[in-house]
Image (cartoon, rainbow, N blue to C red; front, top):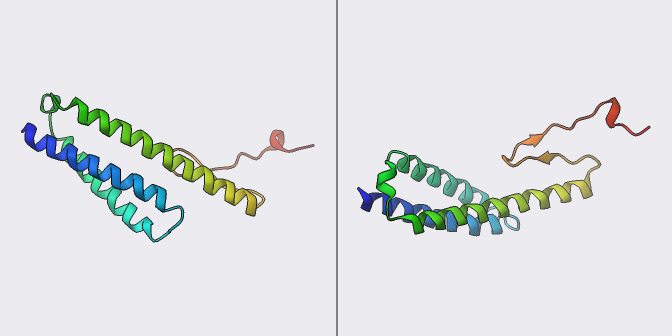
Length: 118
């Protein structure tokens, strides 16, 4: 069973590395977005398969788990940086840019009496 988990972790590491490269290149080449979406879906399937295993199955694989944690954090940082970059472009072009939160959804602008300049 540990052999299967080890292979799944290796597959996940590979997908995270591919995701990292695509996150970097999608900013300059929108054709990469489809590939990125495919990688994310494949990664989701691997995570689903991993969730079927017990904690005992992961014994001795701590190094791979640390590598996955580090790659995931790097990818999150790159994605957040991309969102910030896009937001800055929108703010340079439009008066009121839309803001994105960590999950990638558009934040609703909070306009009210107290937020307006008097």
